[in-house]
Length: 139
Image (cartoon, rainbow, N blue to C red; front, top):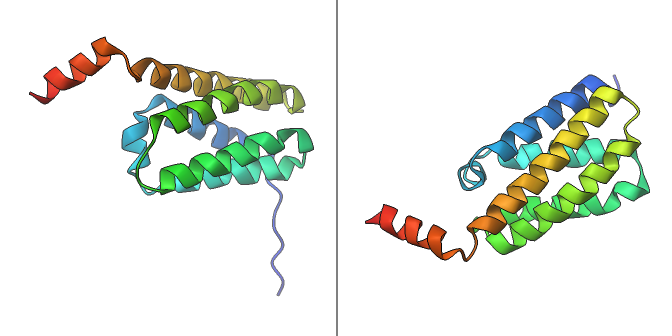
């Protein structure tokens, strides 16, 4: 008996998009330590590959880089910020390729969440007030 890959429908893609937005709204350092993060990235990558649109290639490449980076153990905020910022911009642009309005809305929310997460990370880098706050919290 042969098994055939059942194509994902828009509902499954929407569930994955919702999961990605929820993930991004959580503490990324904490999420990076959880085993399921790798699966989130892989589902996201596979969903994009299913679309089979060459204009989404950079998003796939950046997601693979982000997945590998988080899988490496040590999270470099500068690398993550750069990748997430570019992913946010490209994901917002990709919403135009979604056929289903509900999917397009979720892709837009994901792009916004990526951009917001990148902005939050950027804001936490090298900010004296933030560093002081972190240092005082340790004491």
